[in-house]
Image 1 (cartoon, rainbow, N blue to C red):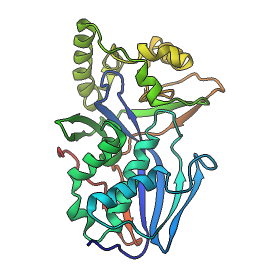
Image 2: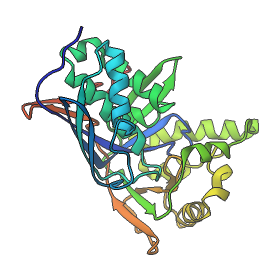
Image 3: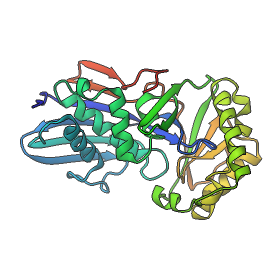
Image 4: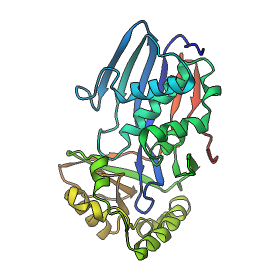
Amino acid sequence: MPRFVTGPVRVRVPATSANLGPGFDSFGLALCLYDEVRARVSGTGVRVIVRGEGAGELATDESHLVVRAMLATFERLGATRPAGLELACVNAIPQARGLGSSSAAIVAGILAARALVEGGAAMLDDAGVLELASELEGHPDNVAPCLLGGFTIAWLAPGARAVRLAPADRVHPIVLVPTERGLTAQARAALPATVPHADAARNAGRAALFVHALTADPGLLLPATEDWLHQRYRASAAPATYALVSDLRAAGIAAVVSGAGPSVLVFGPAEIPITESWRLLDVGVDAQGAVVEVDSQHAERGPVAAGRAS
C-alpha cells in the first residue's frame, strides 16, 4: 500500500484561456496569473483556508474542488484515504470568469496528491495526470495549458492528449474581466446540436491559420481569431462581453471570448479603451505550466515536457 510523505507540498498553477476564437474545445493558453496551494497530510479531518479570489465563498471542507481532486488521485494511486488533510489556498485567478479557475483547482489537487504519495510520479505518469485532469474537468482544453504552459492543442483519442507550442515573442495576452460571473454549463447549453457545413469549414481554416499566427506571424491574429462555432450562439447570455469583443475587433484588435466567458482575451500589445465595469489584467503568457515544490527543496516542472505529446 502506498505511503504518504512527510512535510507539505506546494503547487502553483496558472490561469488559462480556452477556445481562443476558432479552437473550440481544443486550443488553450496559459497566463501569468496564479493560484497557489500548500497541502499536507494531517491527523484528522479536512481543513481548507482560502485567501484571495473566492475567500468567504469557496468551500472549506472536503467538498472544495482541490480536495475532491486530491481524493480522486489518491484513489487512482491505490492509496488509502489519509486521516486528515490541511490546505492553504492563495488564489489570484478570478472565479467563474472564463479563466480556468476550476481547471487550476483540479490540476493543483492532482499534482499535490501525487507529490504526497511516495513514488506517486512513477504510479501516475505525465500522461496519466493529463488524463485524470481531463476526466475530472470534462474536457482537456483548459487543463492542458495549465499543466504544460504556453499554447496547447488538446484532443481526445479517446483519452486526453495534448501538444505544446511556444507563442511568438510579440504575443502578449491581456484579459478584461467583468464584475459579473458566468457558468460554463449555461454557456454550453446555448450551443446548437449542429452547425452549417460552411461555418464548420470556415472555422477549420481559421483554426489552422491561428496556429501559424500565434507561433510565427502575430500580424494575422485578427483574421485568425474569427469564429463561427460558439461565440455568436452565446451572445445573448452575456451581451456586454460580446459587445466589447465586437467593438475591439471593429477597431482592429484581435479579441475573443475567454473560454465560456464572460472575460475577454485580447492579443496585444494594444491600446484598449475600457469602462469601470471591466478590470484589465496585463498577464502575458506563462511558459512553465504547473510547478510543484516538495519540502521547499525540490522543484518539479509541470509535468509534461514542452513539445511532447502525452
